[in-house]
Image 1: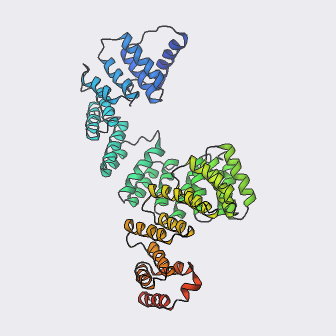
Image 2: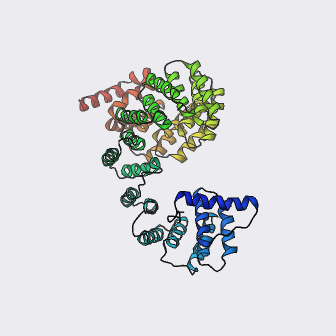
Image 3: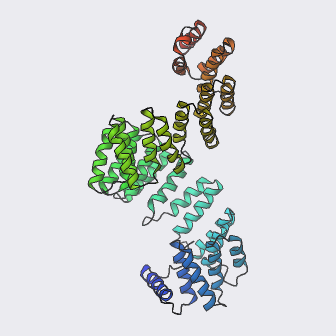
Length: 472
């Protein structure tokens, strides 16, 4: 919903709301006209206080039963209480001026809730026209959202940029703009755009962070780090800047830099539970496991619902070959973040260690439901069945993956390996040749599956040598 109080400044709105709350608190009866109650309803909807919005709307109906504006207020109330169809019906039957901006904005919100994107856009555009195209940033952002939901990313990007309000919620607005550029495959244009935003305001932390995240999407982590460092130099208390820096440092195996950035964040009271987890990961990678355990536990104290803290301990216990304890922490991490496949893959490994293959396969199938285009899920499924001593099911797993990912070299190498394990040499060589054609370098991993037997197989080594000469 949108504020309908553009004719009032913030102080006037606050005074109006304070007066309303005083009336409610003291159980007295003060007079408010319909316009004032409309402003009060909008205020409460803006701060997501539906209970008080309902109270103000009910008072409007009691005080002003014949005022057409009350029908708009009633429609807003219905929308806030998840009854868009009745809200729409109320609007269409209202005597209020249908060309009024407030009417069209509320109408557009109804269509948004009902998933009727084109009608929502039409209503919002009428409201823009009613405002004479001035101060319409919120409306442009809503139009952008409708276009994005329709899959028209070019128009979504246009309106997100038109809807930029540089005084509020810049991080979220820049995220939408960056996301649109990314979906359009125009990440270089995004970089140009955010450079322009920085030229407009060199001290915009949000613009520096957005630019850094563009470089992250391009895989240019060193460049990203430079932008994040500018952001925290401008605002040393900016917590997300330290998190993104530590994430990039860990990704680049610059673990000592992560430790340094943690110390800097601590100096500026910018320490967070997630930053502690990244710090713990750095300590663990540098071999200080005992300290890493302590850091993860401190992160839990700061945020008991942070999945990364439980997963971090689970990963440490996995590395220490303590699968039973690792599973306990990883299962809790999975409960907190049920769509994080990294946790599920490690759970599969841990259950395989204790020979609970059917449970491992349940997690494999969870991953499969989330991401059927991930080659690793079919590899994990195959490995579970190999450990279960069920080669036929193992082969079926790879064939299932190849139907989704035809020609995938990693799956073909494993299929070839299974053929050789079953002494089906001809099929194995044919499959190995397909894998070599697609990814010659993958043969090194293939040979590691059973180095002694595979490297001693003359036919296999001759085929690999043939493709080495072809690639030379």
